[in-house]
Every structure is written in C-alpha cells, then in structure tokens.
Image 1: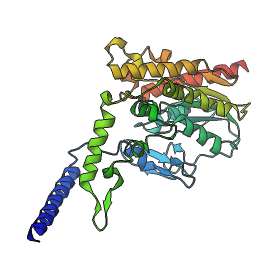
Image 2: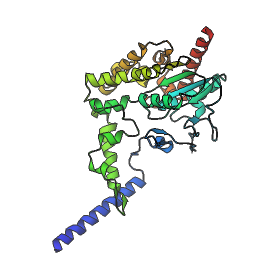
Image 3: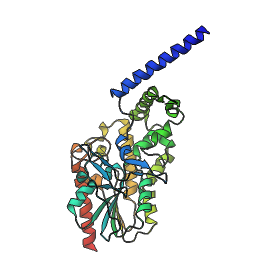
Image 4: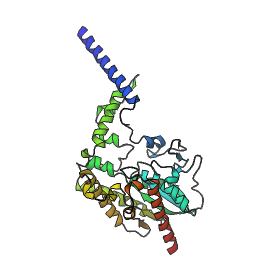
Length: 348
C-alpha cells in the first residue's frame, strides 16, 4: 500500500512539475506559436450554417488594421458598411488571404489600390483568409446571387497548394487552414484530450501539439511524399472546376477575371537552385496554371500575372515566402485589373 501511495505521489509531483514548466515555457513565449492562423481566428468564425466566414463588425487595432462590417466583408475603416443594395457598378474580389490583403492595411491591398485607381466602381472585398476555391465559390454564389450590377469579379486563390503537399493523396476539398490540424491529428491523444475537469487546458499537451505541428508540418522534407497522379489531377482540376460552377449559373452580364497561382519561386533567377520540395511545389503550381490558362469561356478572362511579375524583384512584391503580396505587389495587380477593365469597357 505504501509503495502504491508513493508511486501515486511521485506521479502527481511529476505531472505538476511538467505542467508548471510547460506553463512557464508558454507564458515566456519561448516556443513558436501553435496558432498558425492566430490572426485569422481573431476575425473569423464558424457561422450558423457551419461555414467559416468573417465575423461581423470586427476591428483589430495594431500596426495592421482589419475592419469588417455586418455583411462579413473587409472594409476600409471602422464603422463603414458596404451597401450591397444600391445600383452602383461593382467589382467583387473573392479568394483567400492574397486578395484579402494579408498583413496589409486596407489601402495597401488590391482592393484599396483599385479604389484609388477607379472611382467609377464600388469595390467589394469578399475574400477570406484560408479559403479554398470551393469556399470562395460557395461564398460568392450564396451571398452575391441577388446583388445588383456586379460587372466584374476578381478571383484569386493560392490555397490549398501547401495543404495538398502536406496531405498528399489524403487531401480533400474540405481541408483548409482553419481546420487542417483536425485532419492529420485526429487519432493522437494529445489532440483529443486538451482539457482536464477542474484543471482546464493541459499545457504539456499543448507543447506536444506544437512539437508535432512543427515536425510534421513546417519541415518541408516531410511533405509531398504521398502524392499520386490521381491526387495531383484532383487538385489541378479543383480550380477550373470551381470556375465551372460559377459559369453554370449564367452570369451573362458579369466578367470574371481569374489569375494563375503566383509564388515568389516564379521569380527566382535559376530554378535549379530550388530544393526538391520547392521544385515539386513549383511544378504543381505550373500544371495548375496551365490548366487555368487553357480554360475558355466567353466572360472569363485569364490574367497572366506570372509574366507581369517577372519584371520585378521578389522582395519588392512579396512580404513572405508563400504568396502574400506587398503594397507594391498589390498595386501592380490592381493596375493590371483596372487596365483590363478599361480595355473591356472601351471595346463594348
């Protein structure tokens, strides 16, 4: 009995030391943040239809200001409400964090630059960070089907390239940056059991989750090793498949401007300097882009950003190694969109 009591006491002391050490470790921010999409979660939520969307009336005050309105749209200033019921000619932006303007103030985003270039149109930014093409299409079809006078829609999605390279042939269209951890970790006990009764969150398990994510997600050598020709075709067809969904709704009076996937790797002087993971990634992106470029339909316009951006330095137009644009990169694209619109209107 005494031995059992000592074992239990030792176990409780060990658990307490581990928890206290883990709490200090987390509080001092020694480790990398587990919440990769922390800023995303600050202004997104799962709505009543089990669909991730921007929260209503959110404002985040920091060096980057993010304001949303009651329509779940990113807007230029606190208190601004997008009027979707007016007769104004509209340009709607749909997609993920790239057209949203990740880590940019509104004026530095594509939408902000478009507003400064063209006051003839009402600019509506309906992009949401982490969205896949499927989610972007669903949001547009569900929320904008009755909006009047949408003359142009700009469509841009980088997602889910990196997620596909992580999951390989286990990837599916439902996986996005807000839920991906649930898919690759659902059988691990330290993801299943996050809290204890009366105690709350288990800090040691939180660190284990951090370590797991860093090991199996952030290190590129652990990626892209489970792909098949079939799974590659699935993601290549995803982008044009969503364009087809929009096409089938017969938006006869709306022009859809869609883009290739743009990566800083496109602008490298020597692609032979890329590591194996980067080469695998850029080859996949090129296949998707070729499929997009060959997509043909009367009111769908392919905007070849890869060729446009090759005249610029990587550091001038991107803010990270993924895909997110700087203010300069956003301005270049806004200028190209605006010029495309002017050309179309001049020819009508």
